[in-house]
Image (cartoon, rainbow, N blue to C red; front, side):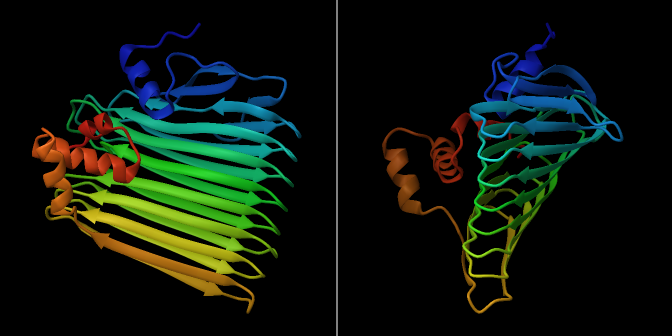
Length: 319
């Protein structure tokens, strides 16, 4: 049985809602090394032979199963890179829980780059949850750079929940997807920055098949002197539908850029977008404060509700 420290357990609970080693299929990586793995008859987890990372094979027709693949960094000065490939069999329906937690106790930068590629076979369904979180008493940066690549075959469906909770000093987030006929993709991204943190996010979805559809729903909060750039590009090459909605709250001296882009290469493509950047309404703050909350508690309550996260998680942010 793998030994988990108190810090390991705290990170796992935060990024994957795990309390110890999970049941079912899993792969836990800590400080660049595998520390625990299990496969099941339906889900096989194997190491790549040519580079760091894993291959995950979900058998056709698998229903109601999950696989957890969290990554932990608990030392200063480490740069970790992994390449993970998922092959989700025809008509399968699974949950994939990923994410990375960094606890940096020192002065050097700790960084994790994760490249995840998903192939969803005909009629497959997947819910993918990826949470990123940083903490630790050190002054070294906590950097997380996720890249997600998706290929959805005919009739496949995927729902992505991409969350940068708090404590991440720098991130470049890339999500690319290609959809065949009748495939459907929903992307929900939530990002919080504070202090002097920065977050660049780029989402690109290409609708290639008739009946393909996508929704990209992004919410972000920028506090302190942090900086955010959000870019989303939808390309319609067939009788397909796509929509982008990005909403942001800006506070203090922060900066936010929101750049939705639509490209139609077919007269039958229907693409729409909306974007909004604003501040917390004073009426909301006043109402919560009259209920006995301090101003900071009221602000965190509003931000947590806006981002869809637990209020306690906002405490990990650097001011």
